[in-house]
Length: 111
Image (tube, rainbow, N blue to C red):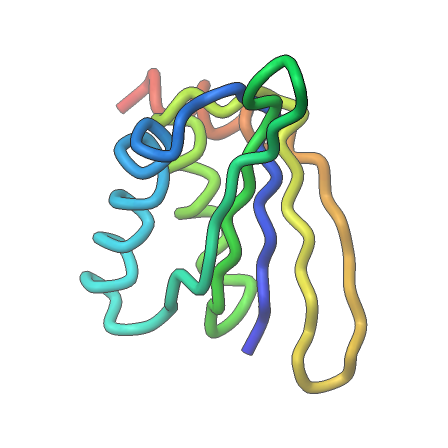
């Protein structure tokens, strides 16, 4: 099992975050019968919302490509990051997904 934190550098409201990212992710989890949204939040300062994040439990890295597709479809910018925490061995890895977002976008255009 992996814990996955998605950091999205968009100044969007919690409702918009849900519509653009969380609901489609939950639909994927329901369709696959695995995965769970465990939390999300918006970070604000005196200037308002600055960015947001979403925390997930996923069974393995195999689901990441589908999650990237959801991020692309929701308009996540290329400097969105995914940090994977392996629950079993305590290791973690942060990946900026610019290349994956670009790749997923170009594949989506050819469908």
